[in-house]
Image (cartoon, rainbow, N blue to C red; front, side, top):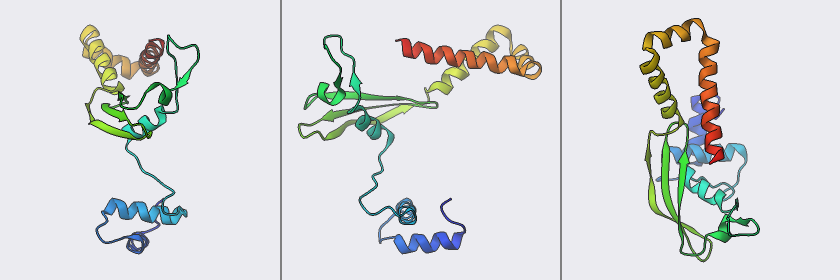
Length: 166
């Protein structure tokens, strides 16, 4: 928990705030201070940047290579690559470029929309309602909840396994 009460929160934020800091920066600084994290020991990154940095350490499977190389060895200086984050609620896409010194630059800002796994689940549910009828699906949910849940669990398993096999 961040603070026990609002007066403690105000005191901690005001102790750690600098002129021009946003509320989020004040809360972050106060949280770092309370956790004993010194300045310069914590970096906050947006998800696409964190994914891109993480990928630099992944081993890649290339058909023309005899051994696995790190992604960073595969992507040479100046090359651009796409970071695609297919989450539960959204799909986010951005393009990064790798420089000779190993640094990364965002070439195309992250964009996307509500096309994550949940939207696929909702489309599947709508599909079943069109085939069976909404009343049948509601009756299944009310009277056979375990079977209703199993139906969607099985669909989730098929979704995940189809992504892994491709």
